[in-house]
Amino acid sequence: MKPIKIGLIGLGVVGSGTFNVLKRNQEEIRRRAGRGIEIAMIAVRNAERAEALVCGDCEIVTDPFLVVDHPEIDIVVELIGGCDTAKELVLRAIGNGKHVVTANKALLALHGNEIFAAAQTRGVTVAFEAAVAGGIPIIKALREGLTANRIESVSGIINGTTNFILTEMRDKGLDFSTVLKQAQALGYAEADPTFDIEGVDAAHKATIMSAIAFGIPVQFEKAHVEGISSLQAIDIKYAEQLGYRIKLLGITKRTVVDGVEGIELRVHPTLIPAKALIANVEGAMNAVLVQADAVGASLYYGRGAGSEPTASSVIADLVDITRLATADPEYRVPHLAFQPNQMTDVQIVPMSEITTSYYLRVYVKDQLGVMADLTRILADARISIDAVLQKEPGEGETRTDIIMLTHQTQEKNIDAAIAKIEALETVVGKVVKIRLENLA
Ligand code: HSE
Image 1 (tube, rainbow, N blue to C red):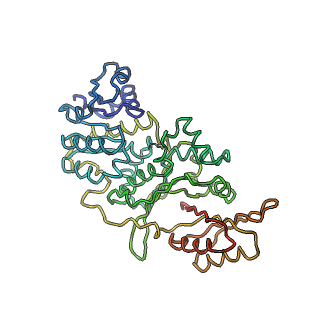
Image 2: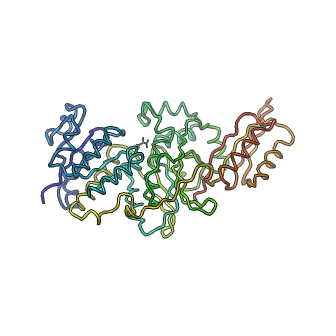
Image 3: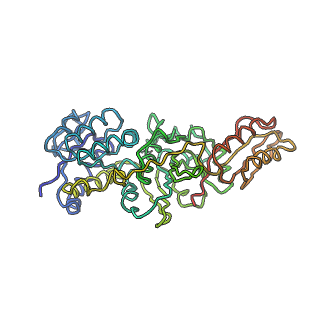
């Protein structure tokens, strides 16, 4: 059988990894796919740099539309990122009857519904293993490996940059901005790190996993997105003293609010028990914990970014498409795991309705009755306290921190209690609130 022909758009970190791994392992990949996978054309901005890498193995162009319009190309691999040109290219490739492989999480989290519908209509596949957690085959696991299960929750460390920063803050007791500068110097964090540190990149990935886990459309606009830029080293230290670590988690789970089923979809710094396996995922590594009814808990760990790890996922998609290229579209694996006419309209609940536990740090004047006031406010709100840590004021100081871990409650209850606590004359400044998940 003649090789399937690939058009690659973008030859950056992931594109060059894809080119190199496909070339290095071509014989093994051919034996798995049943036919060769050949890159026929590459679109790049800098043709000279690309020529030096591919050494005449395929045609180099600077106009990516030549790739999506090329009659001989079967699969377009979109690796340029961003939403404007990438969306135009992907939709045009689909319109031209080509399959698409993309690593573009922002594109799918924002425009996935439109893109998957277009692909469905045209009978082509849009594959995106590389869009979530780099080299970890989590899309395959959620969509196929766990297909027997009712999935209850997916919680992941799905941004390596922030996990690296949090690990360094904890290990070295440094503050956020110092570690961010180090991460940028080491090349872990981008020059503009906003998407990573503010949780947007993780929320794109959590949105995609939420859709696949629960059979709902992608709904990035309903995700709660909170990053790590305002996290203080002191809270990491107190959490540690209480037996917890703070991780930036992407969480999506089933919930019931006032008897109605819903889905939680949120990204924020989270205290998790230090003894949990996922709490020990350090540095730039990623991990995703899935709770499902038949299998129980399963954990997927690996490199969430990088040239060849991400290329590993891109090529896995190429092999899947190659194997299924001749199958009728209705017998292929659905884009979002559930058949398109079997998606549900279970709603993503507003943040005020989510249920979780909380870490509170209250900075107080060291006066008689302060603790009694705090516990009374929480008791009146029917919020149970699980642990308390009070620091002795330092030498010559008259103020100190009180740290409390609460039992589970709804976010609107804890926010109302915090407003009352902040109104106390003995409380100084704002209460620090960090959500806590036991992941049980
Ligand atoms: N910037 C991401 C991270 C990798 O730090 O994990 C690509 O999504």
